[in-house]
Image (cartoon, rainbow over the protein chains, first blue to last red):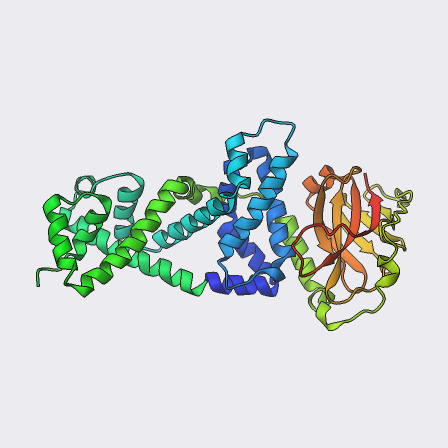
Length: 176
Length: 229
């Protein structure tokens, strides 16, 4: 689905831009919110997605779309931060986004979004135990107590969930 | 061979396994290819989840809700549809134009003329003169309708070869910021709806020559300019 969207965007289908916005807009907004005040977000979002459209022919659909969009967002966020010299911009934020690690941070965020997307594709029972283990810090014993299910069931669901998640992530990467 | 340990692999990765469980698993893994393959997949998923949690915790926490409050980008989408409807914009490689030289030689002798020329009968629609600027030599005009729709007629501009294209920008008097808003088609015309927030941010329209295969930044080669505010 992601690969098909990337191809359509590269061909210049305006509907693909809208789909790209629906799919990756939340990620871009979340990323921009790390660095920019809320009052700047809408304006920068417009610039980012207008640029996505403007340069769609330069996008290589073999590359992950979310990472490419996030790369544009990073540049526009830097522009915006530089424009805001009249206000205090946290030095750490400026350093993080503009420094040599800036691209890596954007890539990590894009990767996290891949993980989130894949996680949402798991069966509810598997996603639930992985959510509790990785994002709520529960041990397997605590998950069993929380969900009122046997420990063995938690172990099986967790193991199956990780296997399926890995499969989704590797498939996504190989087809994007 | 001992019993497969696939269900115990997550415990090994999260540090919940006991010493004995770790050692038993190690012994088994050295002899069981199936479980080693399972371990590889478990490591991929575990590393991915851990990285996401460490470097982008907000992705997991907030994205589900944020989709509901995405800004309205209808103006951007309208522009995309307008661009896509223009056959010239999708066939630009089919045409080869010859005479770029008349516009682009001359080494930047700016002739930035008076630019404001309001001739409309309605405040909702007016004409903005686009004077030769920078490397430009011929004027053009833009019709501004409803405060944010630009209809640009620049048929007097020389045709460009297939590697270049005219692009429309908004900027301010000091030219301290350049905001791209659209392309001029091979027929020398553009129809562009600009987000109102952008129109109010800037004051001037500028048209530049852009290399299509260059990084997507302002080229520095402007040929037209006019103030709309």
